[in-house]
Length: 183
Image (cartoon, rainbow, N blue to C red; front, top):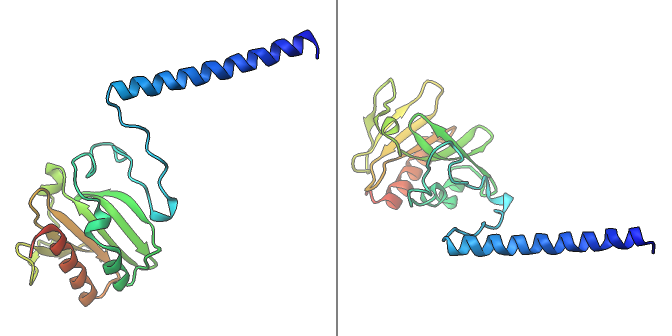
């Protein structure tokens, strides 16, 4: 081995040691400052992982709210014709921020009304009362999506459905109302 090769090898080892030391120092500093450790990557089979601020401002996680996937449970979505293997997408609409599951022509979504403009948003056609759910109202958008506005203690939620029959939609409304304490 030439002197030059030995020097290159020693330089590479020194660089590796310096990188390790730097990483340890960074981790120690983050720990002492109370920074949260970097979370493990989410399982891509479970849908879009939520990343704080991913929609440009605080979402439900930063406000300490339950993930929409827990409020609109997988078994209720499956009974409405959206397979449990359907991955969600994280979206924002004028009426809220949440998750949407789409399978063919069927979709179901659950949104939180987090901001004043979302709370005050009203569909052009107005709303009508929903039977069996205290304070809930419903409306249909021009594109055929149905919205059900459900009052909750912290933030109201909106159930959005498309391509789902009336009976299945009502079952989803009841599942959401049970989860947010509106029944």
